[in-house]
Length: 612
Image (cartoon, rainbow, N blue to C red; front, side, top):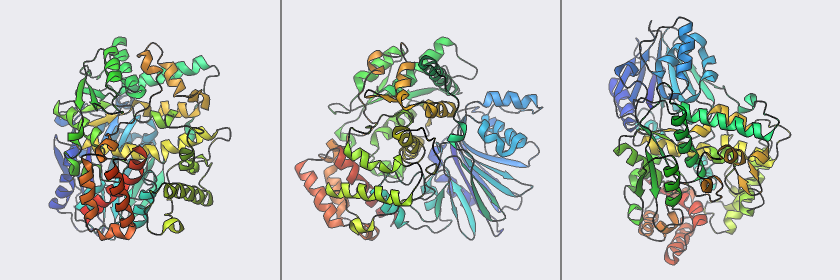
């Protein structure tokens, strides 16, 4: 796990060391254990790397890394969990390895299989490989976009990096706000991350499951992974289906315990994180494998005393079951303003709440020298956890587009109009132009996939939430918030084998009789606390935003809205927004609905003020 960056001067002029050093310094927090640079012989291409040493923390794992004969050079951010199995396969072909790192395995895999190596990997990654003979640059991102990769292109240069702000602040090219994206984010904060567009017009995102080639100054983008092409046959009987899920989940957890440094987990007390830590304990009892970290008994729990989203009792129960002594981090009113600017800067995008809670818990991991966390992300979008159809009219309207079999512009426009109309009726729509100028949607990864005809509305909605909307946004947030402190997050529920298997299951295996994640709950019988396994309470990993906005954040919002930010004023009816915020703050009537609708406006103004 690291931070990667690179510069290609398309006109052949040399890249200066100061240029790549500045670019790399902007992602220094992603790799606190060292840095490296590499230039091709013409010096018109440079790689920069910041290292977070997890697998083979010796100098043998340093990057950029060159192949033995020097033809290929790699930059890599992520983990290939099945690197030991791939290493044995390559050794059987005669490959001789000189380190214990997974980076060297990827380099050898490229030389053996080329692009065909990607489907062989079980992991998360963003990588760049340069062929010094062909003078070609290859970039690739993992199946589901767990690890980030962005690039900017001008007539003079091609620049890539692990974070948006690095490209914006490196001074290598001019950047400007993309007002179309900004407007779309304010209507639908989950409607951008699955696209190639970003908040800055010149910066593009390599979408999950895509790769990029740069040759002769031309950028060629290709989708290399489509989940639908890999759906397996499922067992006929329910018991066999559950057993298969159990085997896949436990193997996924076991693979993600491979580490040469201490690992742990962020434990909320909900089903997902509790299942992960209990599976870690089960794996140890069954016998640890090679390169598994024996220093895994580290559970970190964010608690919110007096708040409705405090799950401390459940977290204590899960930790006791796994025989782990947890570390509790209390988050209260006093944390509302602490490090606020840094947290917003580290998140580096627009979201529906202030992500103080995850930022603070990952900082605690760093303070205790635990650099890897196995977390439960992805389970909600894979198996259903949010309100299901029939429970909330607002939810049905908000997700109407997700039930479409393909991206119909007319149907998408209709769904957007319904969403905007509902928000306006609630008094939370502040975009200039009103309903006559609703911001258009952008093409999202996987939304054009032709789903199986037998799939119902739930499976269709989950497919889109997983690939296109909700999950890409959550993955972006947790990557930035964890890597702000140099913490690697691993996600057992996002093992590609488990994902494709679960996607292929019927809807009744995911949601039935008001119960979500049915197959996972059945698979964990006798393997975790029964009260958590069968519990229906769903609490997101969020800061207590209503309490904070009704209290200590009130003054901050008032001062923020007083600032003159022309780019924001062009987008938003500020008088109406300010009146609504003042009313909510004065009456102390902020709730989760108003937070979700209005915080993106506050977040956006903060971002645009910083960029001005």
